[in-house]
Amino acid sequence: MNNHLAASDFMKLGLETAMFKGWENHQAATQANNCSSAHGVSPETSRDIWNRIKAFEDEHSKLPNGTKPIHLLLAHRFLWKCHDEKELGRFFGMCENTVRKWVRTILPRIQLLLEPEVRKV
Image (tube, rainbow, N blue to C red; front, top):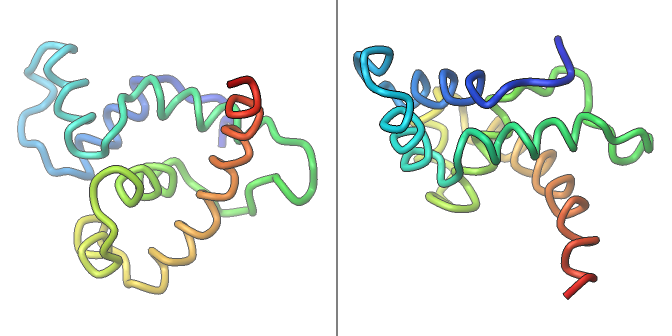
């Protein structure tokens, strides 16, 4: 898989996951708002976080094989919209154990991105 994704990739994935019907027929601003409302962050933010996480070179920080962009959207929704693993599983079509696995995989990497920013404050 390509290491770098565009915001449009996350928008499409986010809207399809949230089962927005006919989203392709809406203007880009409406699409972005719908995606943000479903996952708690904009497609641009998802793109930036994904691309920065994929750039990690440290063996302990690298994403494991099999990590997909949908797993980042899952972590976003967990953080900003829904903390219930069962509900997340229904939304993403995954069992609770799979939800838990990916949340536990992605969240520490998001935290690694935030640590330098917090230190600046």
